[in-house]
Image 1 (tube, rainbow, N blue to C red):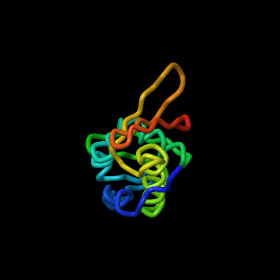
Image 2 (cartoon, rainbow, N blue to C red; image 1 turned 45 degrees about the vertical axis):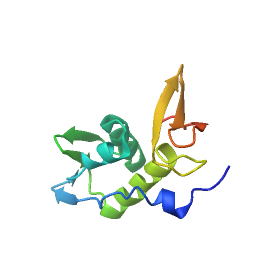
Image 3 (cartoon, rainbow, N blue to C red; image 1 turned 30 degrees about the vertical axis):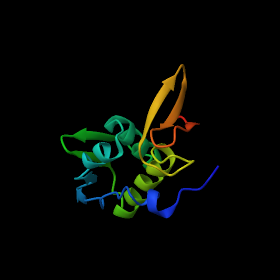
Image 4 (cartoon, rainbow, N blue to C red; image 1 turned 120 degrees about the horizontal axis):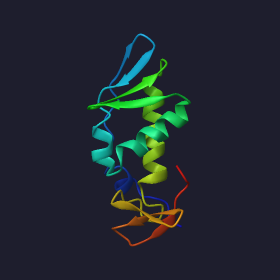
Length: 122
């Protein structure tokens, strides 16, 4: 497998997470931007973040609310990891991919090079 080139991998720039804290809750104010940009289901992204942060989370309009105080850097790292593992093609590095479910398996299909790669279960 080839490694993504810098030009294709950086074509998709994630916005900086806008994090605020209210009491014991962390609010990701610009959460709605990520599903649109990554072309993925908002619930799947939220589930990934909640699992990785080991906390409960919910969507409230354009924002996501997480229980506990989480740092902005944590969201940056996790969203980049999500993009690397579930969005970017491992062959050509293109973000032009979609997820296809066959029985209980999920595959990442690249619309740029046609590669089909298995995904980790989320």
